[in-house]
Image (cartoon, rainbow, N blue to C red; front, side):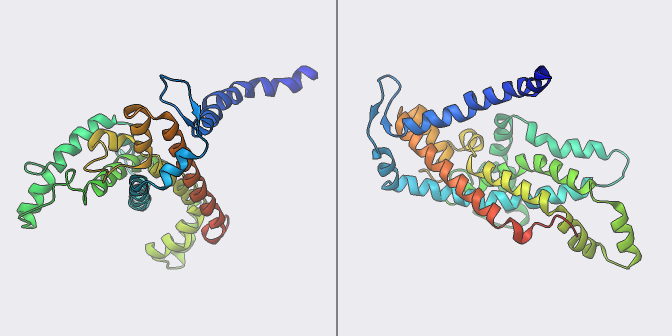
Length: 291
């Protein structure tokens, strides 16, 4: 009997050890490093709140934070809307629908370097596909230099990130759609409900817990975005597309300021935690667990 009680904890032990060593451990070390001046080559020196004071008084930090919030404001609704549209499209009982589900999911598993090469060509100023379409069909004689223009670089990165990530959220929403009993739609059709009424009166209310979960993970994805910035603009021009996650990388591995980068990581953690907490506080206003 004693051995039987111990068995579940033995199965949980690898996960708990992994969580402590590879998740909570680095967070604790970064929290300590945030109070130090450290460049890896020399031992860390305790400097108290100096790194946090420098970040808060830095114009670049606030510009980067603003970029991160703007990116989230573009990325989160873009991914949510596109993922829902794709989920509704592939939630059909058609022959070969599995092919389209795989096709829509494909960008998510494609390497960011390959994605960046294709989109760099699309966004190219002189010979890019997008500017060619704008000149030919919309007669815009001077289209923007998407990735080289400080006003357009961040929205361009958001478009690429939305295209790449929407496939994953689509799968979660599709699972939610397929869990809705078909008898509800059959009853609605018998009552004369239109497809629009079915969507707003049945689909959205029953999907609200799933939509809330997708919203939370999408917000977290938005705040920790890194790869698209690294691969396409390097944070430029003039920090216009630099997000907090990429700014942390720059300070840690380009400028060698591990202590300052750790303090920035803690500020990013506080920002993500605060946003998630607010989302959970507002959950009861739009999440319905039963009709």
